[in-house]
Image (cartoon, rainbow, N blue to C red; front, side, top):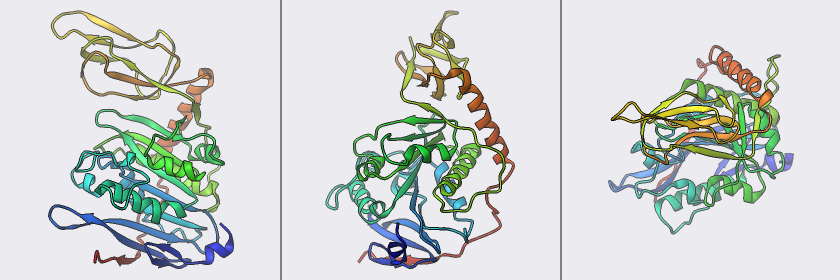
Length: 362
């Protein structure tokens, strides 16, 4: 973004945000059955010098709460040396968040409704508002997710290859694993890919559970990306960050039969072809059926369900070609995470007073 472009007021739904200001805007989306207006809360921080415009979003799926806490912590610090703009949307899918559900009230997945429609369903209208009035004016994005209920994910970054600068941005985030992942049709990530703008999708932990380790790692990763983009000055840390391991393909190892799951391997472990991952116990006898790896890779996700059916996904494995060094990289990343849990990235005693704008739905 040029200095001339940055000097212009940022417009969101007709509301003006001048340089070096911090404000919050509440954008009307539509009415619930109670006639209460659903609003999209957007926090805007404009720096005092030109730089990228980074959009950080969470809770596109309403039961994925780790990202909400990540953004809440981002809001705690004033960032006086911010270059460019930081736009934060802590809860994208408010109806689903209120219902503690992954999906919208009509059971649609908001992350398959982009770019949306101004005359479509509630979710399509919300997707259109975010696309047209916010995302299209941003230069970079980070979208925060978790695994599903009872399906925790190893902290990982997924990104669409081929977008200029995106792999360097993924490396800067600093999680153990990064994954080449094409954007699903209708996903928020597809909007950025179509525009040729880099957006990372962070996955860590599981739905409905607040996981401090994933929150801390995501927070640290966002700060690292902002430093990489020169939105923030470099940190004083002298500890070199480990380079994430790249997976170009992922697949699920599935249950050979139904029964009781008796896992042996855990998230982040390296597996070899033929290695024992766990067993399926027959609930009516002493019989056990082994679950063996059909490929080499790293476990990036798994089920926590104890009772399974034949064909259920048990272990999500990212394929790798460099297992000899991979475990060292993962161990180093986990050591960094342990360190970050004992050293706050921000001073939580600082609170930010942001001017609040509310729009009437009329």
